[in-house]
Amino acid sequence: MMKMMKVEVESRKLIKPLTSTPSHLRNYKISLIDELNPSMHVVRILFYPSSVAGEKLRPIIINLEESLARILPLFYPLAGRYIKENHLVDCNDQGVEFSEATVDCDLLAVTRGGGAPAERLNHLLPIDICAADEPTDPILAVRINRFRCGGVAIGVCVSHRISDSACLGIFLAAWKDAATGGGGSDVIKPDFNSHEFFPSENLPPLHFGVSRTRDTSVICERFMFDKEAISVLRDIYNAAASTTLEGGRPPSRVVVVSAVLTQALLRADMAKKGGVPSAALIAQAINVRERTVPPVSKHAWGTWVSLSYLEYSAEETRLNLLENSDFPGLVRKMRETTVQGVKDCPRILSEREFGRWVLVDSYFEAAKKATNPNYKVIWITDWSKFGEYELDFGFGKPVWVSLTDVPLKDMFVLMNNKDNDGIEAWVYLHESDMPFFKHEYHRVLGTLLTTVT
Image (cartoon, rainbow, N blue to C red; front, side, top):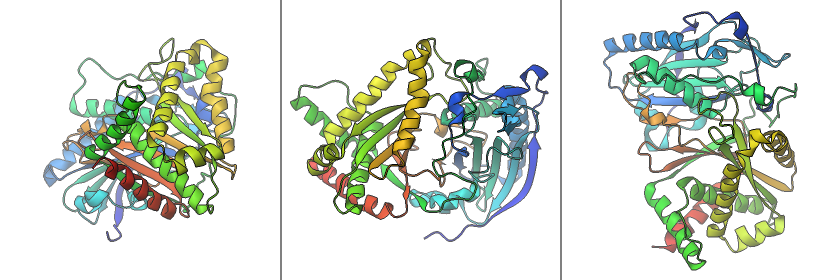
């Protein structure tokens, strides 16, 4: 077991945009969709091995500061502060928090064996994940963590009030280009116009139990799916599909992993309730950028996520997922709902009433069901396609890209692995649910993997 790692912050400063934000851009209004996000940050930690000698590390860090200042004029709201009473960002150029810290262990102690526990990784973030939405909270914060061996971890927090995970990917790619001279003439320029499509209605955030006083009862475990396991899961589906004449393209690694996790959680929920099944709502996130008509830019800032929903009554949950363990059927239905969600994207902007239902009202309904003890609402989001293992800031490419402890329960976040052929599933559950889930996960996956061997 990894010993408690000690992280000591050595410096903290504010990085301001190289050029001042024009007065006509001073107030950045958030969108209706952004208003609903819980008060927290979207986070990422990128781990780099000790490929840079100690004396060469300082110039790289200085370059990171300077390149950050150079791109902030394009990402100007990130240097401002959120004014929640007015539902806008005061783009006052107050700055991005940039800190440096030392860690009293080797990087390998954190990354090996599936990585350190998620709650330990929190210490590598520049600020607390829930330190958001107050006037003193930075919208963007960065921490350079230096390990005893010379390795480095870059911890990044960006406010969920104005950003989704794709936004963080956009920013990191732009920062990398600025730091290394990459990108050429193809400079990443974000679009900050989401409020023009769905203006703010001064709604309060959906709570989801998130607060600055952390709920430690929500815990995280990681589950690795390598390419061999994913291949077997696809083969199981393909064999079932061939007998029903479905055919077509094999299911994605994301959907087969999601189906395993979903089946395990619903079985765990029933076991915890003494054999009583719950109605289920499976909500899968879809990035709508470049899928709308007219198309939202791939560099559009803000929350541009819809949810596809697969719903089961309690009896359907019992029959289809628990007694018959119909894994191929669950894969098919989860796939069908996401395909339909993608097909619906062109209507989001061209039919505003439909767009509001997809992006806002259906989200409200799902969140309400999540408070119903007779429902199990499962939130699934795919963050495996942001190319973060290609982010070389001067340290080489990362050996691991991680999340941390996130205070949202019944959520699966699917991350890429370094070889781009597997999935690292971050599972966030109430601490009382996790033992049941782990038991059912190993039972479900073990049964599936032995089916074809």
